Structures are given as C-alpha cells and as structure tokens.
Length: 201
Figure 1: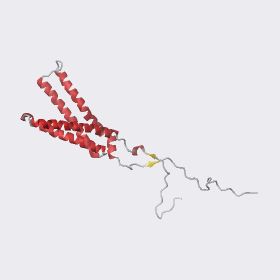
Figure 2 (figure 1 turned 135 degrees about the horizontal axis):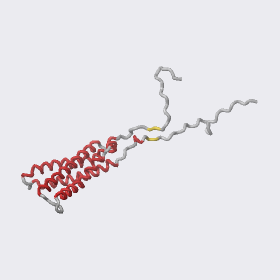
Figure 3 (figure 1 turned 90 degrees about the vertical axis):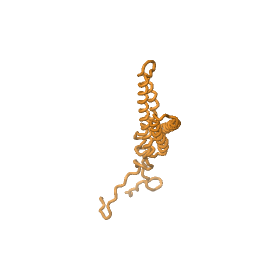
Figure 4 (figure 1 turned 180 degrees about the vertical axis):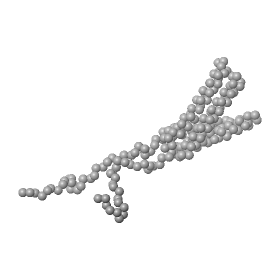
C-alpha cells in the first residue's frame, strides 16, 4: 500500500524555523576614535598656556621700570604672551569638548610657543657671543648649554603640536555619533522593481 508523502518537519513548534541570525559587526573605521592623542595634547597645551600666562604677568610687572631702549621688545613680548596664553588655554578646553576650533587654537598656540623658544635661543646665543661669556673656558659650550636648556623647555610645545596635528586627533574632533554603517547583519534583499515594471522572474 502506498502512503501519501509526509509533510516536511518544521520544528517542534509546528512553525517555520527562524532564520539564522548573523552577528552584527561594526566596521572598525566607524568606531568612535580614541581620544588619547587629543587629551594628551590638551593637557600639555593647557600647561603651556598657564606657563605663558605666568610669563605674561612677569613681563607686565617690569614694564613700568624698564628703560625706553627695551620698551619695544617688552611690548612685543607682552603681545606674544597674550596670544600664547589665550590660545593655549582656550584651545585645550575646546579640544576636551571635541571642538574643531580647539584643535586649531592648540596648533596656533603651540606653534607660536615653538617659534618663541627658537627666537629666545637665537637671542641668547647672540648675547653669549656679545659679552664673551664662557662656560669652563669655552664660549661655544656656554651657547650650547643655553640652547640645550631652551630645547628642554620647547619639548612640551613640540609634543603638543605633533599630537594636535596627527590624523587621529582630527578624526576625534570631527567624528559624529552614527557615522558609518553595520555589516554582517541580515542579508540584503534584492531591490524592488520600478512601479509598473515587470518582475525579473
């Protein structure tokens, strides 16, 4: 005797088996970027801004008693330290808030600080050569010692500039939640045909 074919087994519940779920993965390029470089640049920049503020107060305190021959230099230093301290205080604060302007101000302030230390080093070497100062009997050693000390002070400004300009910092301040897309989820459905068109099957 021939029996009719048995219906396929759709599971214990009597319904269709659920479609297998694929793990949802996030494209590494769309993950929130690490703020390590930005935060480090902000901390170093803020310290540099406070140092610039200290130097500004020091210069202003001697303006009243300074001779007229150096007044122009002191006024120029005052303006420089105003820009230095303002950019390296406001910039890092905005950088902590993930603002693009904070990165720009931090770059400007640290760049000015680097230029300032270089200019101070040149002036110091000229001063050593002019007065004929010696360090253990050698003018070149005295100049080298001055440059070495100034370079140590300039290292934080250089590090701040480098950390603020790297692409990871730029991505940190420009990244917005929801950027990118997920992949590995449900399989994509074929596109629907245009209205009134024929089915491709």
